[in-house]
Length: 444
Image 1 (cartoon, rainbow, N blue to C red):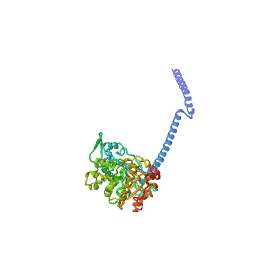
Image 2 (cartoon, rainbow, N blue to C red):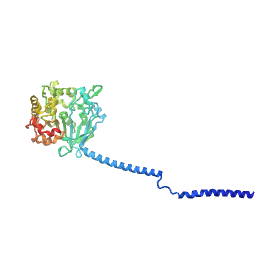
Image 3 (cartoon, rainbow, N blue to C red):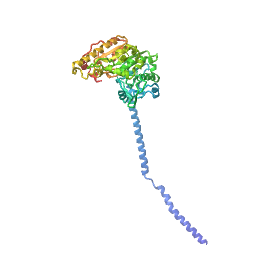
């Protein structure tokens, strides 16, 4: 029995020894197996790390490039004015709406140096005088702030280039977006409609709401000198709203001046004997309920004939009622008046004599108007023979071709009360000669 047990233990021990002998080489040899330098798993890890590093380098480079471009863009766009739309609640609470019902807007380029000096510029764009016309306008920036440009370039009197605009280059600039079709004069409290589209004729309300909002949201309330300028339809707006603006500004404002560009519109017959401007202004006055506008009432109340009150839209009538000093800038051969009011499409020597007679009659009438303007010592006039329309907001503002002095020089003299630069009595070139002299300015 003992022998069997010994034998069994011996067999068991041999079995364990065999197992141990089989296992020992396995355990012993494992540490001696050197891993490969590059395995597939590590290769993937290295590639991913490399891609991450490359991606980070690309991002850093892009961020640097974007920063450079951003700074470069803003250096270039310092001369632009950015769009600001009035808060909807502010506009609706006052009934101040563009033709399509959108809130009014303005463009603003603040001065880096002072809050004391401000230019408020009113752009042109003619007028709408029917539901159809105003509906068409409401689909464009002329009747809506929704489609207005985000920014606009500032040139001419609005430029921040002190070489060409030394008097105003450092001023705060406001451009009121023209979206009412009435030269900021309409005052119809009702809502018109065309093809289920509501139309709002609230130009005067828009103007007052913009000024009130600007006094609250900018430093306009701290102004000392304010210039209200406008071109074409905006010139009419500047002329008629100048005194109204003065009453809306705080007493700290020392001076207000009005600059009226390309708006010496005269009630003259066209080549067929029709009075186009009279027909246009009659319809605009009636359609937009301008008789309700506070700005024009001092004039309209003096007109005994109600049917003739539209004539207060004519600069030759209204300027006599303006207390604010006014500076007129105009061409004696204004291209818009010649084309749309006088109905003359030909040019200079190509025109028949009867058409040239109409052109020269208009020129002489503008000269007479200019002489009447400067009888009021506070006023000034700059007339050019160059056949153009609008000057203040154009590169031609500082062009020497326009006359013996530039508009900039003449305006500067007027603001300093130097009347030697007033051009109301100068001799003017014929249209043919003016075309030759003014080749460059006409291209601006």
